[in-house]
Image (cartoon, rainbow, N blue to C red; front, side):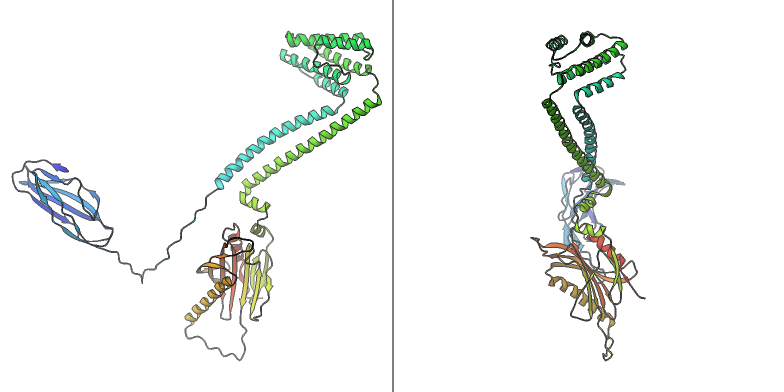
Length: 531
């Protein structure tokens, strides 16, 4: 409990008050407890006061006021109630020098808020709003990831393709031409450091070893320098490879220099490296001239092998080409989606029905009497009717993705017809409008539509024509669909004294382009007054 300590010498007096005894639902009520006591009294206010059925909003600190020979201790409480009726504020207990002081019960009337249902307009309860998940941001992130991945893949693909293309081209060349070409590539090498000399001599000896293995059929790649020279000497002694001593000697010098550079880190002069390259080129040429003339069978095998290599190269080039085309196509597709959007590109590729309608060439034409100008994805076809007063044009059907129906109902007047004006024109217009609404609903129900939810409104077209609009949703059992499809529909009513024009449009509620097509059609509507 909240307390104030003073010493008591006289009897204390408790007062209770409220600012009003009549409040409205949800209106704040102030409740006040006040103790009048002398300067020596010990006063204790309730620490957790109970005000049920009222709710406690807040309480103020104790306010102390000195008045001549006594003190006034005041505490305020803010209360509230959300149900109408008659209530009592419960009694509150205050301790003064250990003795209880009980506040009186206070009756409170809580009045309901008066709603004038005649003067104040009432509105329907708003339906639940379905919020679709926004996948756009996620799709954009995925597309950008694909772009980066495809670019990296394209760079890697280009590098590997060029490398493989070079390998295949080199394999198609005869060994002699390939060796000469590789030696020509070494001719312009700039050499200064030991590592450069080491790479130079490694490639130089690889050229001569590979050539001897392919053309002379000597196991040169896996042999040491001395073993290779010994094998060449044996072939020379056997008469199967007619090399002179100078050629073998120059080859020995090149191999020795190469071993010193690679293993002893020798740094030779530049002219020595150039002379060694010329010596290897001379060895290759001399070896070719020293080889025996190949037999017809060897020539056929060589030709067959070259044809095999060419066929393999063409096959691999086809594979690489198709792969490159696929990478380029995917990259183009992803970039297009980032520029134009995911759904427009996807729907264009897969020929989404209503996307095809929006992208096609629209046709503007006039229909009926009086003429109505309208722009549609395709020409509206005339629908024959037994009723001579009705002209009807349409596109699609209830089972198609988009449906358009244009109806002209203008009864022909005969001279003998004696028409009397209605006594109440406003009532007549209401009855006529209700009849048109009923005709629209009857048309939907006759086709099998159910769960028809409808609203109506008066709108003005961009051409300035005022029309009545009936719109809503319905469920329709489309063909090849297991369940009924929820659809949007709109009916635009042009009413005249002579008759009516009704434009009805229907499409699936989930269709991404239905509303866009409808808006374009409605914006094009125009009555032709002068021909």
